[in-house]
Length: 477
Image 1: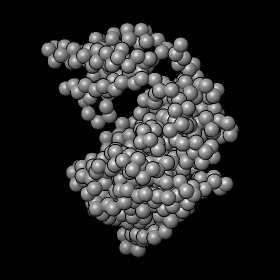
Image 2: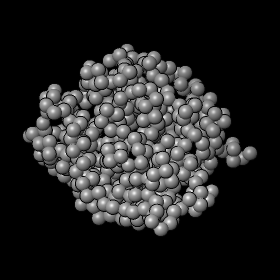
Image 3: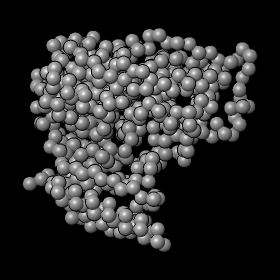
């Protein structure tokens, strides 16, 4: 008999008191993002963002020290220069790190006692896009209220009134050892009593921010590294490689007899893994593997793992089996981190491969996650395929989407709401239904889990059809 859903499952609401502080128009759930040289990703806006960061990050009247890094996109030069100019225009000091992973920015901001950190990256997006992610002095992403303050400051005249002149203008300088500092820190998260000697690893850096540091981390720990995606041109980030396209890595793993393949995305804050047989091991399985070991060692603080509503029901059951609880959040690693910090939890992540080990990093880090997984393989002497099979039993999951002309609150879509209620009652505790709007387009996303794949596929299609009928009724009204 299939096991029921855990009674320990909870949902973290970012809109509850202490959550979202207001409406932001420039910042999304993960910073600012768009097509380079089109609003909002223009040098003019980047300049204003730099000014605003320097202003809000000042402490005790002292000019702000702002650390800036980027991935390998062609537009990074343009935006880096504009943003640094903005910081200098407000009297701040800029520390330029060049191409470096987003988690390195988070770490170095805190380690070098900077007042703020900026990662210029569009993560897994194509090279035409770019983005800006902001970190506080503690290495955590700027809270919503601070991003909202920056938006207001960019349009209310504050920056023009506060701009210094003459000897009070700031300066910029290069941090030549930024990559080395980060590599040393990442290596320190791997157990001192273990080595990677003799282990063949395929690492795909996506021609992105980790193209230099990723191979170094594993090589210096003794692994036999086969490096892919380490020749960025400014135009080939994420193109046919990395976490979005792990096929090339998979083929090399099989051809070269590697123990594991690790593919990063453009800014290296997440990973996709394949085992020695070429099978994908996603974030849910990695969380199950790591959480069970952390629980045994007393490292899973407050007996909880934080994951999003997209994580498989099988993960929830695996966590329940070890006497822990799963805390679910909306989609987005920032919500995972918020729930971890507010609840005092040490580990969390997303099915997509954003994994946060708060004892080692303040944000998702693909290299740290890869090392935690490797430490289990080395310590237990078992191949990844065997470990993954034993970690959790995946419940069949179906994802569908329907594009509609306009967004409406789901509870205002009468046909869809009734269908959701009926199917939830029929599935009971043996399955889950999640219907949500995409964060960037008028697309309704439907996720259904249950014991029979054919049945849940039909449920998902029926829910999409119900949404279309609601849209037709609205259009005729």
